[in-house]
Image 1 (cartoon, rainbow, N blue to C red):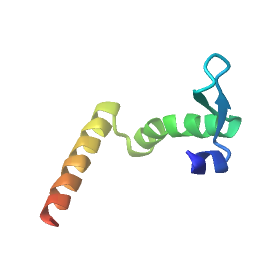
Image 2 (cartoon, one colour):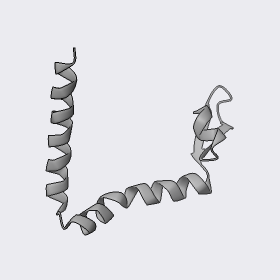
Image 3 (cartoon, helix red, strand yellow):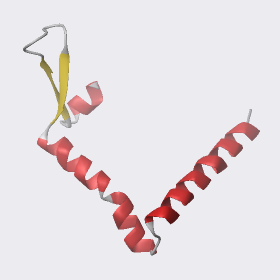
Length: 74
C-alpha cells in the first residue's frame, strides 16, 4: 500500500463514519492506470488476432505450465 501511495496511485482517507477505518481510493493517475490495464486483453487480442476465449485458454495453459515448472524445481 505504501508503494502505491508513494507512486501517487492511491490515497488513504479516514472514514468519517468510523474513525478506526481507513478508506483507500484511486487517484486520477491510479484510475488512468486501471483503465489502461483493463484495455490490455483487448489490445493483445487485436494485435494477435486471438479471440477472448482463446486468450483465456492461453492464460490457463501458461498458468499450468508455470505450476508444472515450479513443481519440478522443488
